[in-house]
Length: 133
Picture 1: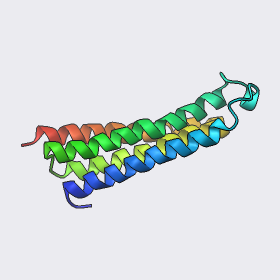
Picture 2: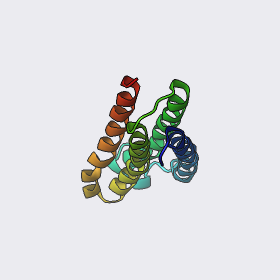
Picture 3: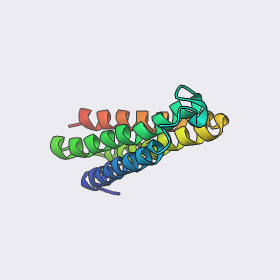
């Protein structure tokens, strides 16, 4: 991924795939939400993490779409744009993965710094690209 436009396209496609993953995961999880006892009840750690994983597909999908549109409309360029794109996509993949893995086995919660650092890095790189003429 060499150019800013490639980075923007990559982020846009990843964002829309995230939207689809949010719909699919919501449909799958929704099949069981009617059962108050499913996974120990509505307020349990496992169900909260499943809900967070489902919504993170949408939230980080939106962030990737916004990034792609920002690069295009603001004309961002420079070496930090491709880095930001990859970091935001890594965050969009690893956040729901961490949520679902943590719902399955609680020790996986220790992996949450990965998506947090990835998304944070993507945001910082975007701001750096914006600050450069």
